[in-house]
Image 1: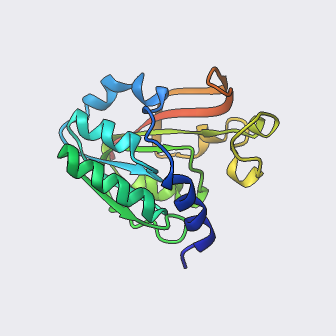
Image 2: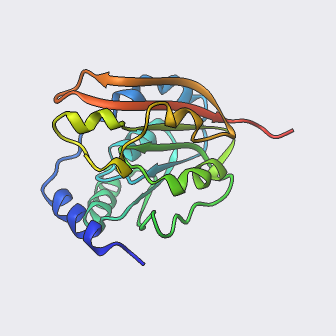
Length: 195
């Protein structure tokens, strides 16, 4: 069952929002992403599609999913206008992840935390595929902005053990120098090819 309250909140937020630049964590791993070309990429909880657009411009065919029909409609318009290979769909990821197995060379998940999806993300990565994940930690509760509900915040080092089938390539945790500052954990990991 879709979370109508969440959908309505995100619709209101995205109606007046402007697409922003891709996350710095994603940009600083551009070479790893480009090594995954050609192929498909997935932008989880894509919002207005800042990462979907970046990945499509790199050369990926991108699936972008979000609970907000407003965000999905705006991303579809932008993709059509720029002629980018992005398929945007409205999906309630918490109740119905709809992720194809072994499908994606790259999966990006930023500032969306639904722990029940962790095994689905692992399974959706193609062998040798890359997961880029970044979201808030519990330290965020003491800072302005971001969620304060502990269910939406990572515990210390939780992200390091969240994906046991993946090999960690890069990791950081702490306060990042953004405006306003944010307490985050950031991961880049690779699905190990099974022998």
